[in-house]
Length: 355
Ligand code: PMP
Image (tube, rainbow, N blue to C red; front, side, top):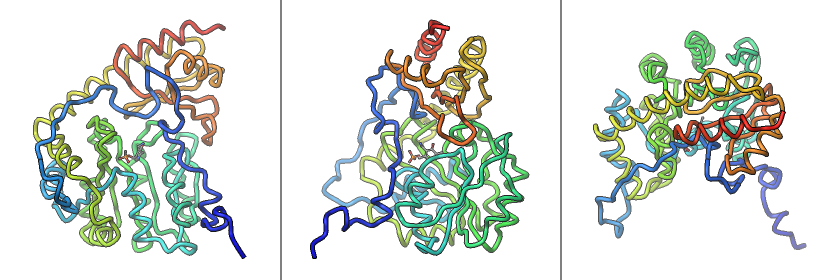
């Protein structure tokens, strides 16, 4: 009996809705405020001419520099193809398909569910409370069979930090049962909130980081997993032999130099100032119901007619991210912080909307 290509594919892949990345969604914009990228390209030049050779699996200088930046030891740091690869490596190392589960708290980042579905791991969701904080009693009830709890802080798309006391309680209730994965993709915008200092107390804490946001290198595809030596050693078993190409490691080295880190901090300060101005400007507009505070490089706002607003800005080449379908976020759009001019263009377009 012959099978169609569809029949041959795994059932969970047939059923899968892939992650709707900003790039996949398309659009013909010239003001891109939908992917939480840094708005301007930072120039880098390649310093290596060794492309005939395979790269190191864990490029030594990248690890050394990130280790110094994060205040850890090299055995506590893994570098990968973006934080997205870290999300998936954890599932591959810790979750038995069709038996173990992962848990996360919507509204949150979309790749936790997509990676779980792709690998064939059950995922459980416990929605955050109305104040966008963890619902700890409900999480406690759902922990049976859960190996990984993903908590995004500051959270995408809501922009808020998760209360440290709640994170401690979560770490206590999962001790000896599951890993807690704190996704700190946006932590450079609120560095005082990092849990890196907690790793010594909690061997089951894992932290995800990236160069895609504050470091302005989304196109580089470079991220980090910070964890106990034991967790990192397990992840090293399942990672690809050459996860980073030589040019990626070369540029990551430069981004993590003293100068690179100083430049990143300067960019963060500029973006934070632009963000506060954008929040103030949006609050003065009729079409905006509510603008939420943010500890990140994006803000979430609730609009009176969000679908029309989204479409009208889209037609003018200003591309935002629609969050309407996320639980509790009806009417919400997410706006990445662009340059001052880009934000002003978005505000001007919103001001001129009819009604
Ligand atoms: N976590 C969160 C919360 C994110 O928003 C993103 C990027 N969209 C990632 C992880 C993935 O980052 P990377 O580009 O390093 O794969």
